[in-house]
Length: 422
Image (cartoon, rainbow, N blue to C red):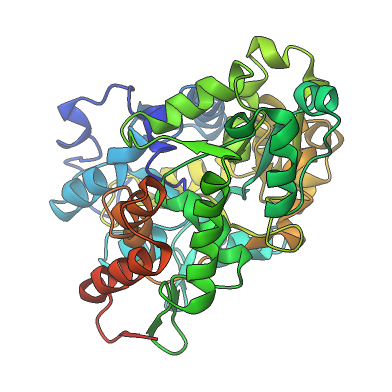
């Protein structure tokens, strides 16, 4: 998420012109032809964009087409794409959060790739990543990267305090006595960052199989209370400034003002640029804590998708296959520490040497939970979605966990036709 309100802020400073919405993917050529120019909306952050842009240009040169890379703020990308695509405009290729695929496919805005070579080339991919490209039995993309979240910790601070990386919430509370109370961990108030607490309690926001809204179930409430419990124990701090929270949390961790935060591999390379982590060995990652042991975090990541109605479909297909090739994924892992979706890339020695891959790769199997593939799920956890204000009210102390969960469940209702609370 990415996938979340506050991860979005990383990219929010990037410029996006009106041209990105007005005809940037259009062409006067017949629908059956190929314009030969692929307009690619890159929704990554400032630390990632230069790498993706370089790989994109290499792919274009090798493939015999042109590519126009436009960085679009993650916070605005989905709505901008929907607006543009519904008018027959927009990019040819979108770097799509895995949580957007079902929604955009249901709206008819993504090209069905089921009968293309891109859809047939799945044997080398992580099965969770492949599942993220599908909706209603059809394939709408190819996997770019896969991610989860983990507990980042400052090894110097923990070692100096004689504290081991905590596996449970109680261990965080115990460690806080040696780490300076609320300097122990900074809780991100973004709604996506509420999911590790909910998932680690054995719950989820919805159950598609029974058409139930489950965010207010006893286990989900228990998970939400665990987050508030860390604040009440003065073992954690948070920020109620939702617009600036992500940047404030990043700054505090990079400066060594807090010992731990929960985040994903997209942040790894940026942390290594901070003076506190000039020695790479000072940056540690482990599974998110849970109630009785290591917990679970949501599966995230991105896919390459093609806009329905593109005038450059042949070139776009070449482009997304090149961008998701083993060679390209290894380069992304080497440069950014992001987790590849191809098994051959994950097994590559250069990829394995990346600290981000080494840290987060092992968490995919036992500490990651896939989000339900329902079109509405992304809207539930978006920054402007209904979970955000309820979670913020909980952390701010204006609502208890049950009241916050009930409020979220009630707000989920209009977004989930046919679902009932349970």
